[in-house]
Length: 375
Image 1 (cartoon, rainbow, N blue to C red):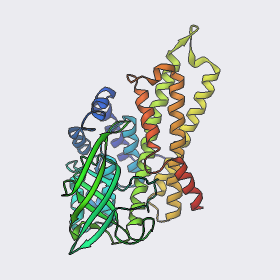
Image 2 (tube, rainbow, N blue to C red):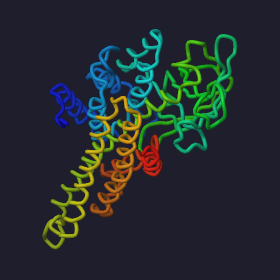
Image 3 (tube, rainbow, N blue to C red):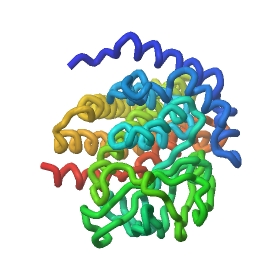
Image 4 (cartoon, one colour):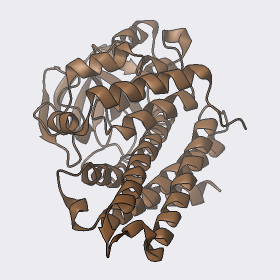
């Protein structure tokens, strides 16, 4: 396997890293991420202008990438800058449109790629534990359209999204694999209630209630009752993106800790000269490289047709990220001492994001069980 990125990917990564360092410095990032909006519509459109969104999709729909390695490169750059913009929602909703959208539905992709449309996946429900097949929200046929009722929780940027991809049960019982359908719902649909809030690590999320929300027949994405396979597919893209984002954040946390060990002095010498800290740092470096390898493996597998191989690689990456991300957060803060917990130090925000990534689209326990079950 060739681990070197193409020249186009390297150029995109250089441009994106430069843009993030210039426009998304930690002080500006925190003001945006912890503010009432949770992100910057202006900067989001600029991310689109430099190709960060278009690179997530294939050429046949107007993008210029769309492979696993394109996605991992973009989100690793975003992780390095702790970017709190709705690119993950654009990725998963966009990939669903690419895979199953009608010609009319695919027209929304252009607005997604130019940053003028914010999209979000509304799947998780109160009381769920990462199960893709646990869907209680109902979709009942009414005339030529559908009526949706139910609740969705922790929908990233759900309050701001103009387009929601909603999972609902059109047949069967709560945990049945058959009977799940996916619907494209406008963010301002009548009967849709939203309660937005700031997330711990920055950005916004929302609780959504669907109370007799009516949508037309053209809102159904893909085949009726057969939405689980598509849901699993787009969740795979989210797993890869989050894992790559975590690697980017780990690199920064690692570099900041190394710099601190070189400059902080005790007893007249840098604390990095203490053997105990050298051993801990060496172990940390090895773990980060293991996480990077897991992400590379997942990026290579996600474009394959073998469902089991793809699922194993993605779960292995997410499990590794969950375990190693928590280790990096804890060790980096401990080696900084008390200052590592302060708001003013960027490391504290990287640590929070690394811990919270573990809880998106399945934590390490969930993916370890999933990996074992796929053997």
